Image 1: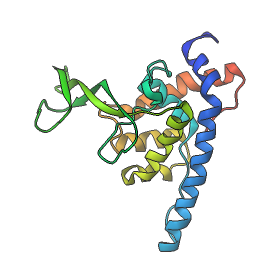
Image 2 (image 1 turned 45 degrees about the horizontal axis):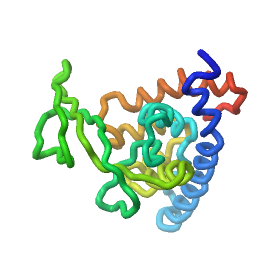
Image 3 (image 1 turned 90 degrees about the horizontal axis):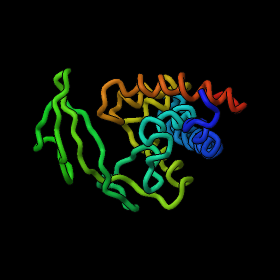
Image 4 (image 1 turned 90 degrees about the vertical axis):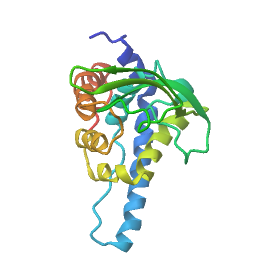
Length: 202
């Protein structure tokens, strides 16, 4: 492990911004919880997006920010509801079938059958784009909190459970996505935070 490797370099640059975005998301989650309690006094407490999760997911999605065009660090797609800037990028999806009518993309480059019977699709799809890194990092938290399918993750008060909940909700089509994020947090983020003398993250 080298203090000048890609992960350490990434942490030196982005650690403050990701931690700040996580803190802001905690405030937003608490505000949403307060609203929910007015309707349902037994509404479960909501927590923010863990910075440890955000950092690890950027490593998985965007190669430690080395592959983050348009300042999109977490691979957020530009769906029909997105009105901001967008960009057409090559990405990979994993599906149990090769049905082109079921899985619609602007362009399908290739489909490869894997040994487990699933199919790896190489496609072009639309992703969100941002003017600044701070804008992209912050919008990731907003995107998750405003999407009802990810709300159960905000009931988790640690990054490992949060990662599994996000994966269960279908953030990515890759198999074992949650376990992959957990592994990156444990094996890549945690030891390098210690090496750099940065505070550990829950």
